[in-house]
Image (cartoon, rainbow, N blue to C red; front, side, top):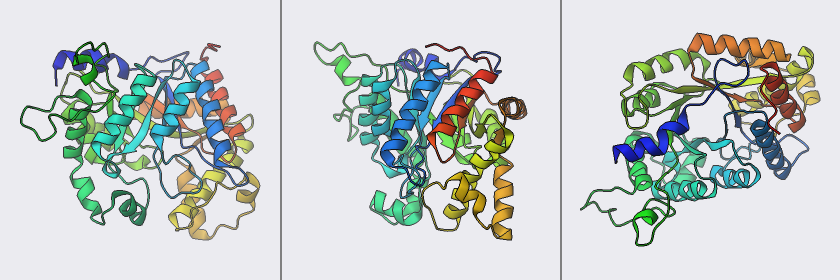
Length: 371
């Protein structure tokens, strides 16, 4: 990779700027959750509404995740959703949090995100994970193989291949040297080409130490899934920072963490809303994935002692309450982990509660209303 080109293309697109009284940049992760009694179309419209709100209130970026075979999560196709969001926003960074690389051919991802970069120049992030984003049987169907460990073990090689496609710089003699991801840099070097050589910056995502170490060694930005692996957050971030080697992309580590947080006008209402997500997780962990239950259904559910123990443990890592309580929780988490950015995900049954949460959090930090 051309070092100067890498710096010009990506260095300035990674680090965000804190707004209002926030100590670090604030961003949004949306799972496009589908509540009971609601449709995927409604969930996708809510995603657009949240992205527009996040843009208007100065959140730094808006990412969507890749999940499969989960009725309550309609984000199986991040690139398609991001194209839709690009058409409805103008400034906010958009990205994947993330695309599960072993599920896809690297060339396909390079083509998809090259297309997104052409749609929204300079504001697309490519976050990559190595987990399947689903159960083993679904992963086998996606990958057309039952050798699932092979995908994880091959992740560094798949990442290197994807990066070569993104930069269009396979060396002479390589089997793929004459293959080009289009849209992409090859259009800038073709006769009459005026295409920018810029491409989306690559992030590595993880919930353990593997991607943390790899991101550090490669000098890439790192996103950790604190929202479902809170016990591993500090060790993984420490490993990332200890492993970090300056690169054309970053001269110092940059780590964001995903955080489950929901604010409401009253503490009791926040508890009602986050209980729906907890019940969804109980059902998912016990092989019964479904639509996100309503607050009424979650309150009426008869949790077994084992389920109640899981719920209490799960909710201990979900920051919820009034806007001031959520702000205090987010500030404490940023200080404890040293995260460079907080990416907030608000999981609840209805879009209204999630929209209200982001508005309250923006107000709590005095984020400007950019109109």
